[in-house]
Length: 418
Ligand code: LLP
Image (tube, rainbow, N blue to C red; front, top):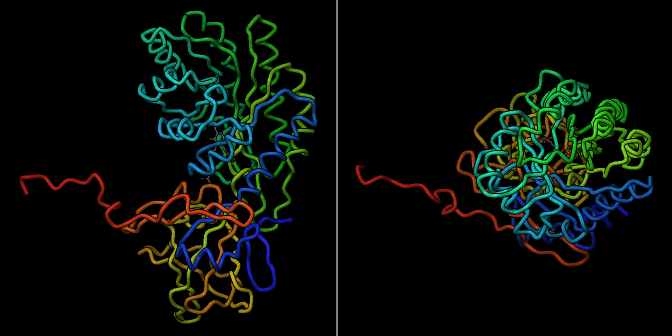
């Protein structure tokens, strides 16, 4: 059963009517389903188990770093993929086992590298020679050894939105796959760094298995070559990126993906890591927003809501499609733009679409908002960020309070010379 479903006129998350949450927690509010998080995680985990592959599914914290979401994933047995000191801090506080944490990112600072060493994380995904040098020096200074995977850039077009493709030759990410073996040969110079893995990630919201297969085959060849040269490569991290359905996309299932990758992965004889964010969290969340006004401007009809680009940036930034559903289903449809209160003409949640013909006070659900929703929210226009709620069965709880105005000026200082 879909965790977000209708019972009569009402939209539910698991056993909780969303109108009730909107009434009591206010809007805008993000709602996450514990059951949907668990189902998506298990689909991935089972796909690898079913293919007989030793593996660890890491959750890409960047997609949704709420502490309750992280705690739930840690409790399912997931690892964590972090890309900053802040994400590492969250992951540790949420209870992830440091031995299941991988640290990626093209620009890790010394403080971040040191924090990762301090936590004895599973490995750093290293993206450049300079980073390797810094990590080696810091590890030596702290009397530690850093386990690393080299992130290679397989130069494969992921076929996704240009902002979401990371595996092309001209991208800032990773080390060209052809240069990785030479770098590995030089790694003996770095005495406090142990090369244990190879990492790749070609992009996000991938809707086809073929670029994934192409890149994994390319990188698997490197893994096998390094192993044959005597390197103790024990891990192959294939990245994240599995796409989800926002509109009517044909999406591969985790099983489709893993079955297609299986021959190449099995041949490496390594433990397989993946780092999925969107697949786990994307369809496990919605954003509820209340309609403030209806207005017409010439031919156009606008639904003005209390959530905008500062709450959910994806439509403005990527022209991303999110389905809009009424929380109560008795209102018909109308052609309109659903816009937010932010002072930018790019501030919209849906543009020129057949939308619920909502009146003032009605609550709308923006679907598929569990990944890269709150995570990319901002305080632009000095708007407090929304509350977040987690539903589990018939229980629900606010897992992040709505920000107050005092949060907006937290840390700001008016100096004495004024
Ligand atoms: N691993 C690495 C190295 C990544 O850069 C990313 C995402 C992931 C894993 C997780 O990818 P996923 O499984 O979630 O596709 N803000 C954009 C998405 C940016 C993704 C950035 N990197 C959006 O809203 O669509």
